[in-house]
Image (tube, rainbow, N blue to C red; front, side):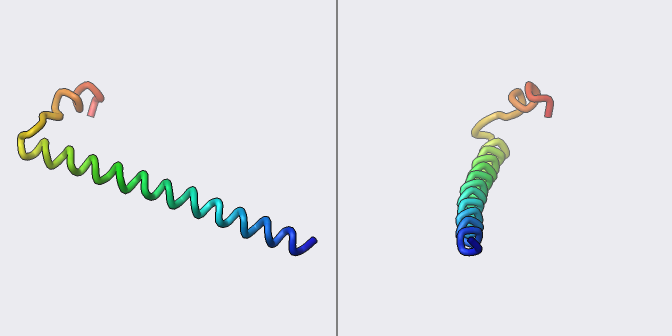
Length: 57
């Protein structure tokens, strides 16, 4: 019975690590995209002002 609990705990840890890894990739991708948009706005390629005003930022 103890082996079953240890096995389930290991499976749970692996599942959580996979979820955290995919969440970290998502956050990192979102930061890179937002930084690219900010850079293009600073260079004058795009204008984020009206969009940010519509969001209330």
